[in-house]
Amino acid sequence: MSYTLIIGNKNYSSWSMRAWLLLEFLGVSYEEISIDLYTVSTNDEVRKLGGETGLVPVLKDGTLTIWETSAIIEYLYESFAQVWPADKALRARARSICGEVYSGMSALRNAMPVNTRARFNLTGISSAANADINRVVQIWEDSLTLSGGPWLFGEFSAADIVFAPIATRFQTYGVKLTGDASTYQARILSHPLMVKWLAMGKAEPQVIPLFEEQFSAFRVVNPDSNNN
Image (cartoon, rainbow, N blue to C red):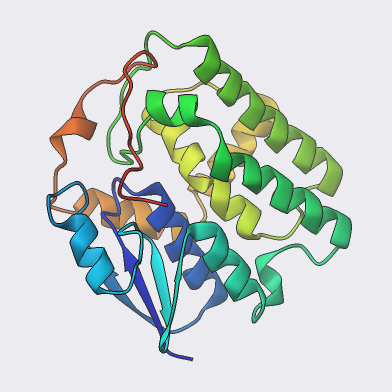
């Protein structure tokens, strides 16, 4: 297998984080190509590399190109069973909660764009963003109760990877958690692969001014316009 992973800035790209964590977790060999996000040429650069939508991440397996994070996860699952829980019922639940992240939680994303090295105080939280936060906490607590932990479905899997950027958002914006949710957030942030990713993001020289500002839930932005 000859993989190439095309991603964006590590400090700002939540979807890139997910694809990178997955490949690292699987221990496969790959070439990494990083594209600066939110520039006038970003989308064209990604398209030239085979990403049809112009968004990152993109995975290339030889001559085959896969875009969309969910598709990348499923493609790798066909070769690496550890991507998802072994139990059929847990696997179905894992895919269900990840689907919520793929298709929803837009209020949370608008309120808290990813900036892993920054520390802000979240102000003016909307009821919609607060509902998304509460839903994440419920998912974490229910999944940990069902599986017995220490990860969402017992063993570390794609489900933990999909929720990893949300854990960084909670850290960046000072969202206070308690109980099992707080313990789980600390666990995912201290995972060796997360520690490595966060350190690389902190060391990046690139700065995207838009995401270095304090945000509130009432400010409408599109933080994932270069990500999928």
